Structure formats: C-alpha cells, structure tokens
Length: 264
Image (cartoon, rainbow, N blue to C red; front, side, top):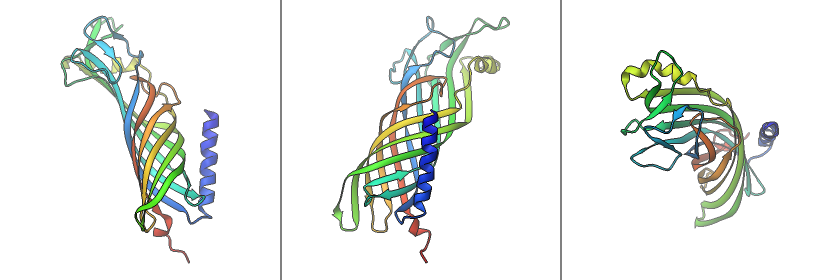
C-alpha cells in the first residue's frame, strides 16, 4: 500500500509539471457508477437458522434477505496527452460514495440480530441495515488509444482506448441506520450499530476500463467507458459486503486548457 501511495504522489507531481510545458493539457469532469460483487460480511451478529437466510449480491428471491453494495463517484480530471495523443495521463480529485444494504424494507423479509443486552429480548427483528461510506481519493490513470480515425467527419475523431488506473483515498463520511420490523424497537439502534466497527478509513483500488472517445474540432473530448471487473485493494471498507470485484460505467468530458487561458 505504501508503494501505491508514493506512486500516486509521484505521478501527480509529474503530471502537474508536464502540464506547465505542453499545449496538450485538458481539464475535465467525470461521473461514474457501478456495483460491488462479493460475499455477505460476517461482522453483523445475524442468526441464520431462523427467519431468513442471507445471500450475497445478485441472488434474490421472495424468501431471502440479501446484501448489496452500489457506488457512484464524480471528480475533476486533468489530462496530459503524449505521443501524438496516443497516450493520455490523468489525475485529479474524486469523491466516491458506497451505498450498502442488508435486507429490503419494501418486502416482508426480516432477519434476527443476536443481542447480549440482559435487559432486552434475546433477538432483535430487523428488516434493513443501511450503510453509506464516502471517500475522497487521488486517482492516477494512463490510457492508450488502440484505434482512432476521422471516419465520421473531418472535424470529429473517434478513438477506442484501453485504460488502467489506481487510486488512494480517505474516508470523509460514514453513516449507518437500522430499520426494525417493530417501530417500538428503534430505541435500540445505537446498541446494534455500536456492536460493529466502522469501515476502514483508507481506501485503495486498481482497475481497468475500455472506452470510446469523440474529439470535436475545438479539442473537446467526450468519453464513455466500461469499467471491467476490478479490485478493491483495501480491506474492511464496508461492514456489509466483503468485496471481490467492482465494475461499472464512466462518463467524462475534457476541455482544452486553451478554452480558458489565452496565449500571449
């Protein structure tokens, strides 16, 4: 993990320094969303021999309680193009929000949470546990244009590219809620939440993507890319899902720096 941190810092420095000396510098915005695939975490003291069984993301039926985790992110994205726009380097600042659920409030399913409180019932009957975790991260990406051509019009270039990236970030938001089947039990929410540690404050990923890009006459670029199944490097970033891979889709727009700064 230390090597990844130093790689991101060094890459950001190089990216910024190079941007001072090149006209191939762009600044853009990005938005992405997707889902996390993995197993249900055993951090919650759930009784699985009564009420309902627990399954991981993607295994749904009318008689099970399931865990799922989705995410979205947005950020500012500087870009430097090299070697006649064949290679592009990206960095920036990104905010990522994970939304994880255990259960479904809109169904009749429920599960039992074991409690050691001597003044309470032995089990709490719960319909849903929700968790939101937000990370502010520094990404570093490199892409290579596999194919590009002016096949549409002379003023519009289409490119197909592959990309790899890594990021490191810190948690800036964590919020969890418990919905009991009986509203009269809601006063025990803090007791349930206090029995499970909060997610890891450190967040790191390594990912790949395939994308398409349109570049118009003024140099603006419009990108759509699919994030292939990729790895979350850090552990315990969610108390509901033990992540295996994540995937999704990203949209971004890049603006030439010359649109904002006039050369003397």
